[in-house]
Image 1 (cartoon, rainbow, N blue to C red):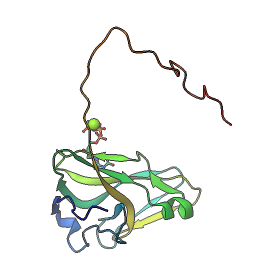
Image 2: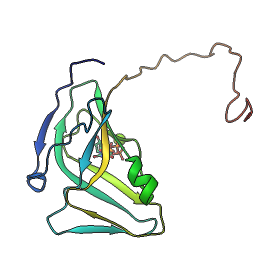
Image 3: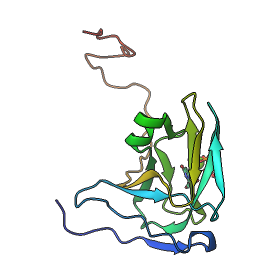
Image 4: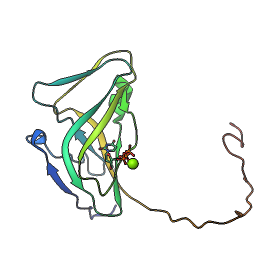
Length: 154
Ligand SMILES: O=c1ccn([C@H]2C[C@H](O)[C@@H](COP(=O)(O)OP(=O)(O)OP(=O)(O)O)O2)c(=O)[nH]1
Ligand SMILES: [Mg+2]
């Protein structure tokens, strides 16, 4: 395990004040849990198949060459059917707005989100940008144009 961590400038927005900064729950956790920065006493209830953008109260400046991925928490998915609609959400290094989590309730039971709930997790990952090299013909391979189950299921 690398012992150095990527330093991320973070700004706590007014409605995020009083909530802890996201942290790694165990020494080698890949993700930091994101807190719902709803107002005290405010709640959002998602009915079946409903979605909402949940504020985290945080804005950040990732170093160039990194992204943050917003991913579901498995506990919420397994127990409540609640997941991140656009998973993995992409936070670009040049984004300076508030990080938000698009939650969707895929269960038949209503699910209520309150301030301070850990609703998703954020993974910091390196980014590789591609550059096109346009050609008339691509090289031949054994797979060729086969895909979408061309090798079978078993
Ligand atoms: O789960 C997410 C996904 C995105 N974002 C923010 C950060 C990201 O940098 C920006 C744009 O995201 P994306 O490129 O996925 O959305 P888009 O629909 O393509 O919007 P845009 O046209 O602004 O790029 O929105 C979040 O806060 N949470
Ligand atoms: Mg985009």
